Length: 191
Image (tube, rainbow, N blue to C red; front, side, top):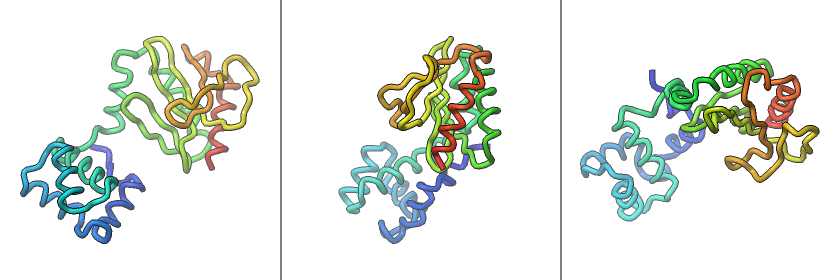
């Protein structure tokens, strides 16, 4: 079963507002794109922005959704995760263990796989789990204002646009109570 990309709250808001903001529904725009035999992102963007005066945000969303629909839809969460670990199977148990631990914090955690990492969100993103190399998992945490209390928690430039700290993990044994505490702290800060 394909992931319902349309269930994303941001995308759903844009779809709901589309008739008022653009003059037609998403399906209406899909029909126009099909009638005009448009398929490339550039051609669709030009058509929507130049010929219909649409803002970049709406044009981009319509283009993305139209092209995803033409390709059979976006990959499922499972497909994204499988692709991440296809050549990094030794790291998969670390991923599973981190998810299992994070789920104990509350039932409001959203697990959102992307192409190269999995985002953990609670109102906002608080952690990223990324198999960075064949032997190293990087755990990114949003811990603004926190100072590392050990060498495991590395503070640095924001990683992936929001993570203030990272922890390198090479085995399940390295998912210590201290690591779980840092994830929990990031989770609590995302409320």
